[in-house]
Image 1 (cartoon, one colour):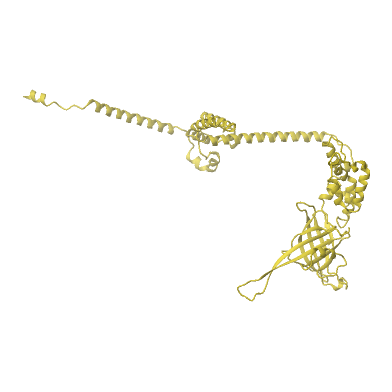
Image 2: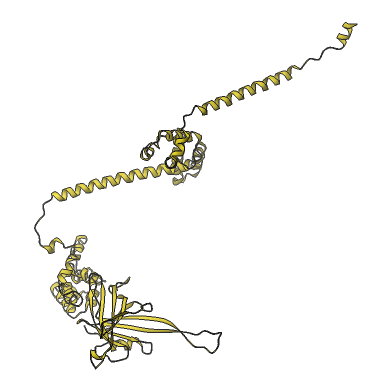
Length: 459
């Protein structure tokens, strides 16, 4: 009976496939744990600086560690290794290129080839190279720009060193060169306009008409006669005609730039009160290499062939019958200054009742209208400061009958198109004639003076 029951009801047996799955899962767990332990042991074996050193040198670590985006974890490990050795900034900059990974170098090369292909117009090939470079390193563009900037800095430093060494050699060679005895005029002179023209013009410089078939009467005149005519114009103070003649051709410019003409112009222009008593036109020209035309153009001077006009405005409140209406009056007045070569200055303060074309003819020492004043002027050429003193109303009773006189300081400047044509008031004051007390006056309403040439003025 027992055997029969055992045969009929056999004991349960576990399937073979279930045991195999459990064994594989167990083996995977064991392998995974071993891999985790191996990674932990690898990180623990990495040499890192002590915590005390990291906290104590926080400022230095901030300067030495690259805090930008890293290209990979391997570069971060290299940065930590450089941190333990504490390299100097110069050494780090020199070895930065050596610490680049081979993959990064290959990515930079591909990126450079892609740029060249893009510049040549091969966009398909450039796109393939861009993809390959960014697959190797996601920040290859930043690495490439850092490499280019580093190379440009190195080339710039090398060029600066070469230029410095070349300049030193030139200084040494010039120091060994003997100095020839020469006059002060030739030692400090600069290249004049005739020498410059003759250097780049191989053809003969002559007067020629615009139409080759037309005659040219100026070609028959000798240069000496033309220079004499230009000198007569300079004696007549007609400098504008001399310069207009210079604009007709290269030959005219060459003759009008003759040093004798402009020396004569400077000699009658730069005299007291334009300059100090101990100066002369020759001493002033020495500052400009004895180029008298250049001296006349750039050296400060006061124009005496016209007048300086300042248009001033201010707002004055008015009266209104309506409380809701505020009335403002815009007041405009003109201040005119005319300078004479003997040091006399005529000032006139006027409104818009008369046109300026009629007022400028009244600026004479004999003027006796309201708002007119006479004074003296002098120019400090070192600072281009124009000083006007003893500015008082013309009174037939003499200076003793006056109680106050005025003084002002102006600065002579040049505009964009013309030279020595603008003057700005810097200081304005009243002087008590009896006590000599000086009271400074506000100049916030004053505006700059602009020069206007008057043809009727005879210099």
